[in-house]
Image (cartoon, rainbow, N blue to C red; front, side, top):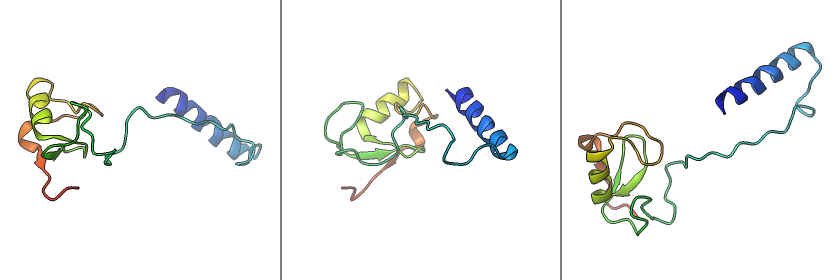
Length: 98
């Protein structure tokens, strides 16, 4: 996927440098991301698929239930969404999060 994106960018830059392309005639390419940004999505924990209880954030910014992410971090040590390294001591409980 990244190689395709790099190739498309390289071709677009070369075409622009040659003067044979303008933003109007560049290929229309869209990508769907499998990673969701760190934002509340109905306040559902993606680990237990239930309403967040004791919301807790990871260093990468994703939010989970405290119990879910601490248990996950003990077993996996990777964020369930983006696979960034997660260490239990770096988890931050969110107070007054709604």
